[in-house]
Each structure stands twice: as C-alpha cells, then as structure tokens.
Image 1 (tube, one colour):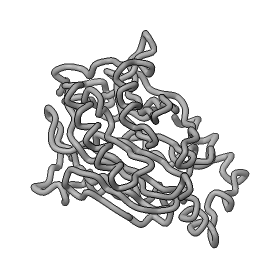
Image 2: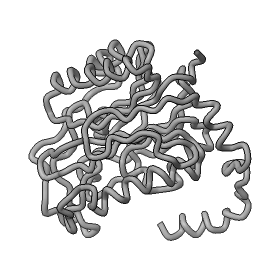
Image 3: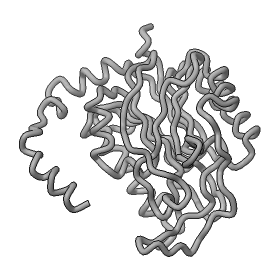
Length: 293
C-alpha cells in the first residue's frame, strides 16, 4: 500500500478547558481512526484547551457577549503537542490550540506525526469579535506529509475562496479545515439540520473542494460550549465536490477510503481548474479588491 492509499478522516467532538480530558479524547479518536487505517485525521479547532465561550462583536467594536475565560496558551514545542505526536505515530493528525509568539495569542492549527510538528497555520480571517482575543495570521502554505501535501485552514478561513486557492496553488492535495463553527444566534432554527449556518458550513466545504479539486477534511466541534452551539457535520469531501463521509449531527469520525493521488488524477483528467486559470484576466480585479479593503 502506498503512503497515499488508505483512509482519511475528520472528527466531530466536543472539547472544553480540561486539557487532560482533551488529550484523553484525542487519544481515543486516534485509536479509533487507526483501527480504520486512517492516514490523515483532522480534529476540531481548539481541541486542546477549548474555544471561546461566546462571540458577538459588531463592526463598530461593540460586544454584547464576552467569554467567561480564555483558552490556555500552548507552545508548538510544548508537552501537549509532544503527547499528541506520540499518539499519532505513523498518522498525520491536525489539532487546534491557542498559541503565542510571546506577545500575541493566535488561533492555530498544527499538523503532527510521530516525528513531531510538521507545520502550523495561524487563523487569518476572524469572525464576530474574535480579533479582540487573538491576533490574525498572515499567510497560507502547505506541508509535506507521508499521506500527501497538506494545507490547513481554520473555520471562517473557508468562507474566503482565496484562502483555499492559495493552498491549492501551493500544491495542496489534502486540505484540513478545522472548525468550532456555531449555529446562528440571530435566526436560530429548532433543528441544527435546518440552521442557516449549518447549510453554509456544508456549502463552503463542497465548493472549496470542487473548485480546487482537492480532498477536503472538515472537522468541527460538537455540542455546546458556553453560549455557543456547534453545527457538527464533520465530513470528507472528494475533489469532485462529493461528500464521501459525514457525521451529520452526531459526534464521531467521518472516514473515507481513497487513494489521494488517484482521486486527484481522476478529478483533474478532463477539467483541471488550476491549470485552466487565466491569472492575467484577474490582475485588475485583484487591484480593485485590495484598494477597497
């Protein structure tokens, strides 16, 4: 079996402030994934230490909901990630945590294997007052893993086509988008299945996978934390935009068996979106977008 054959998976699970409990749950999810021959596992945003317990800032800076506390800060070379790496062994595992450079806090995704930290991504796009508690990342890039070239995004990043496209242009074969994606608080539905933010979460996943012809792993938090209720729906989306596996509204693992290289080659054989781009036609538009930012 080649390194790109086997299975890929995205997890849906709830994580709070208890780091030891988080690590135990991560271990259980990795064990379950290993039993199904998973090569790459995406865990939810903030699975080490939990996410913010409230969101709600307006563009004018007002904030009517504040989190009761903040996630603990962790180092990329710290003991928590070393423990996840020891659990991962041959598997590539993407986890979320709060990281600091000594001055600012960042909402960060980290890819680890038994060899240690493979790469990290600091969340660039910040929704609903998240900027009050985290600094923004400033770049997108991929890392090489035994299962293929991997790009990482966090939650709201996927609402911006440019973010996933930047990873695709950097050679991403797999994109792990880890989330703590909540239901709508202003127009909530009785059922999460009917919530407008559930529909948007699922739509973004399919669109980003299809337009970039990549394997897309969408992990998400489950249940509630503070004032937030998460939409679940962890999934694996193929490079044709088809949902290959999903947890729906349940906790658990969405697992899909596929040969990543073969799946990409098949999807790109007739129509290769990246190869058919016409960047010279977008240059003026790009300038306008920058000017209006």
